Amino acid sequence: MMLSETWHDVEKYFKEKLSDSPEMDVILKVNEEAGLPSIDVSPNQGKLLHLLAKMKGAKNILEIGTLGGYSTIWLGHALPEDGKLVSLEFKEKHAEVARDNIKTAGLENKIEVIVGDALETLPVLKEKGYADFDFIFIDANKQDYEQYFKWSLECSKSGTVIIADNVVRNGKVIDAEDPRVQGIQRFIDVLANEPRIDATAIQTVGSKGYDGFALGIVK
Ligand code: SAH
Ligand code: DHB
Ligand code: MG
Image (tube, rainbow, N blue to C red):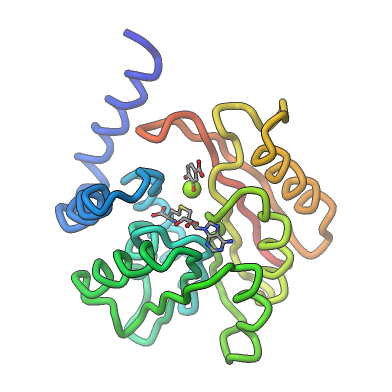
């Protein structure tokens, strides 16, 4: 059996044992049927984000890159009664699908999707009264991760957890021809040289192939 098949089987095993949620499965199906690309985080990764947000006791979450709201809703379900999540999405169509899913999940009072280029919506978050996030998930276009990280730091406080998806990309992170991989490398360099954060990266395998998360905590 191919190693990648094993990854899928093991993903399925842990998903069924530990991360199972028929409600979350419906969202993946809705997203697919709406024609969205299947680049949502995997079920086990969604549960991981959910647990990390809970471990942090996050009350004020920022997400950059909503797609159909799959990761958004995993994170939203980690919020306490008075918690809030803001998710930034470039494509109106993606945001519409996400808002429908958020409503189905009963999270419309806690989650707001803001449509626009995150490079434009991030700089005005603070003046709009959104700041001091305690948990930030970066998952939009890879070329701009460096900028997303810089703005994330601006909207952080001591103890803020910052997580970025897709930093391994099938191992390409150490061998950059692709502009998206170069974007990840610039982000990793900034992360490495930024004295305000303590960070690492973790490689993952599963139904989304071989990829990984970078994660850190603001000092
Ligand atoms: N977090 C989602 C997946 C996000 S996919 C999940 O795991 O369920 C990446 C998303 O980022 C796509 O919906 C894409 O439209 C969006 N995106 C790409 N460029 C963007 C930009 N400049 N600003 C905001 N969103 C952007
Ligand atoms: C892509 C984006 C993602 O956020 C992801 O998880 C996988 C792939 C992409 O743009 O190719
Ligand atoms: Mg991703």
